[in-house]
Amino acid sequence: MKDIYIIKHYRKLITSFRKNFTHTYVRSGMEDIHQLRVDIKKLRVILQLAERTSKKKYRKGGHFKLFASLFSIAGKVRELQVNSKLAHHYDNDNKLGLVSKLKSEIEINSLKLERELSKFNFKSLSAQDRKLFSCQPELKNKMVIHSSVLYIKGLLAKIEGSVRDECESGD
Image 1 (spheres, rainbow, N blue to C red):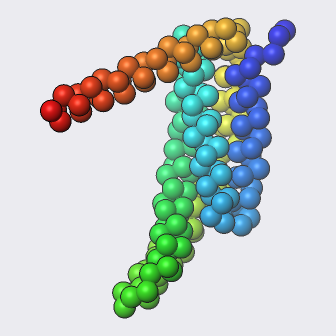
Image 2: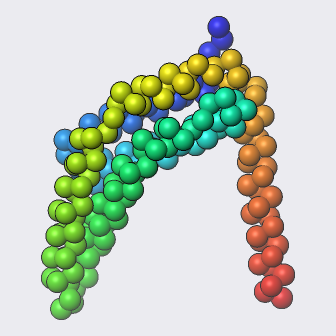
């Protein structure tokens, strides 16, 4: 059977996700958390495309549910880390209080992230992956490309409409 590009790409992304998951679990560095979130975003796009292309024989909901909480709490920690880094650049009387508050929030949310990482269900991920892989016949490369083009055209039409509305209301 010819390689199904979307499945091949998904496998690369899930490998990257697992690597960055481990890095985040071990180090919880700013870049680790950022890369984990980037991987989840990319996975969600691929899974959404798979659902569209498979004519809903594959449903993305199971995968999305697995990633939702992890993505959310990682986002909170990431935002706090970035804000803390930015706060160090300011030189004023409120800086120490802000930095202290951010540090405390980072510690609290990092513990939440650690709990979320420790309870991530890789068995459920594998089960969801099997559902995705079973839809390979529906995920032919040409169909994925066609579906992608239609999706992008739809997005461009929305943007064009928003820009047109903005221009008309600005006159």
